[in-house]
Length: 149
Image 1 (cartoon, rainbow, N blue to C red):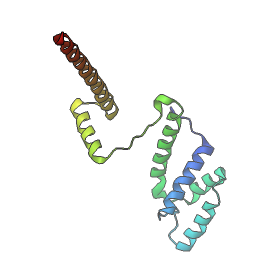
Image 2: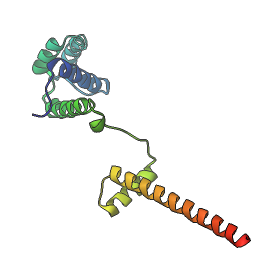
Image 3: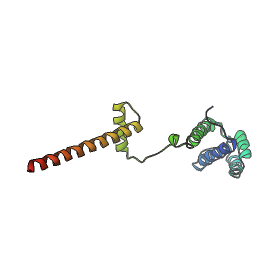
Image 4: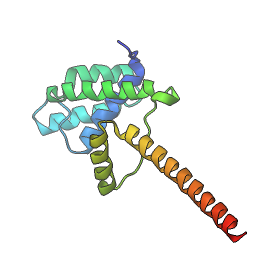
């Protein structure tokens, strides 16, 4: 496996994942009775800073329907964590309006490339166009000076 599993760190991620599920109103326990659910959720909330106990709680009381989702979330979190260690693999984000993203996406499909490659291509094209425009302007100015003499 490429990414090392760090038990304490991942226990915190698992706790936070289940906490967020609970906060959003999801059932995080395997129990049907609401009083029993409340009791185990209260116990779970106290385990935020106790990773070993939190992992034991998750093994015994977590809703089995969340098992695959939790594994996927932790795998993704682990990948992002280790990729963030190096600049070239760190995830960067930009804020795009939907219409801008849509145009960029269509252009990327036309070029058969990724969004990042498309942005890089468009920036280099804009730079090349600007340089050509400056060259033409310079030539026009020189020609105009020659014609004045």
